[in-house]
Structures are given as structure tokens and as C-alpha cells.
Length: 223
Image 1: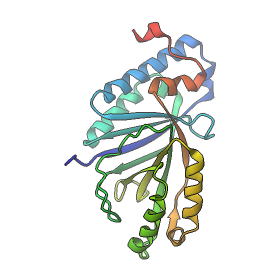
Image 2: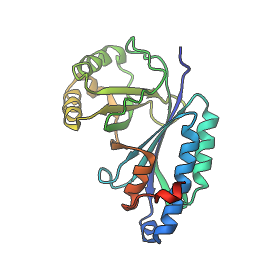
Image 3: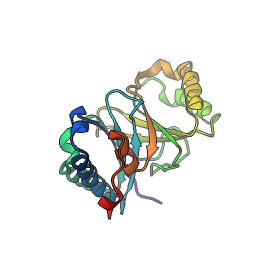
Image 4: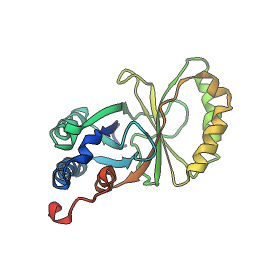
């Protein structure tokens, strides 16, 4: 049985002034950030996503996962020491933890990285009325879209939302259709909050960093 995991969604926005720095300075900043990510990823799940072109208020998302909250903390401390983070803000941050579902028999004690091209993430808060019965309809409709993989993590007492949901798929149109159907269900009447919604494009950390200024990290700088 796998251990329960802490899951952290960190959204970063880069100051536009950073892009006006000389290319060597920007490359050094990205190299430090990449090194911190690679060190954490050696023993933990870490996935990178670009939100350039999909959101106006953030540019990059990191999904980190560990059985230890201290390790999540230490990773972000190290990130904060990099040159790039001196030019970054964190407009959105969601902390959650995995646990067996209270609504279905599926046990997801890890956020399973299916490596689909797109990840759709949003915080989720429901009212308390008849949660179990209403969520059965939600689950039934979701199973009609097997090409969309759902990862749910729980934030009760850890953060402001109750859940963080993350849908993976290669076809954004299918996700749009699924959400449109879900918005018409009885379950949607008892949704208190399900925004902001983030459309994230899967990328290696290196590629997500390159999307920030359109320049790849020089190969010789990674040697």
C-alpha cells in the first residue's frame, strides 16, 4: 500500500522586467532554478507545466509531491534562493494531501502522472447538503470520459479549499464537454467555489523555463 502524499501546486508569475535582462543573466537564473528542481525530482515526483498563453496572471506551474511536508517546504526554500525567484511572485498556491476517496472505491494515494499533454487544475469547495448522493452523479458522468484522468487531493485544514482537482487529457475539447455536462447536474447546485481554473501545458522544467523568454538554456551551461 503506497503512503499518502502531500501535493503542492505552485503557480509562478515572472516580472516582465526580467525579460529585459541580458541573455546571460537570464540563462544563469534559469539554470539555478532548474538545478533546484532536478535535485528535488531525484527522489520525488515533480512535474512542470507552462501557463504562458493560457493565463494572464501566471507563467509556470510546478506540481510537487512527497510523503513529507518538510521536504515540500525545503524544496520551496531552495527555490527561493535561485536568481529567477527574485523576479517571481506566487499568485496562486494550493496545498493538499491524498487519501482514499469518500465517494468511490478508487484508492488514489498518489497523484498519478499520466503525462497527458494538458492538466486542468482548480480548487473546489462544496456545500454540505447530500454530498454523497450528489457526487455519485458527478462520478457517473466522469466515467463516460475515460480519456480524461482525474486526480483529487484533499485540503481540509491544510489550505483554504476543500479539494484540489486536476484533470489530465490530450484533448481539451473533451474536458470542455465534460465540464459543461457537470455544470448542468444537480451537483453543481451545491458547488460553492471552483475557480480559478488553470489550463496547464505539460513540459519539462527546462522547456517551461524556456517558454518564459523564448530562449533555451545553452547546452554548455548545463554541462
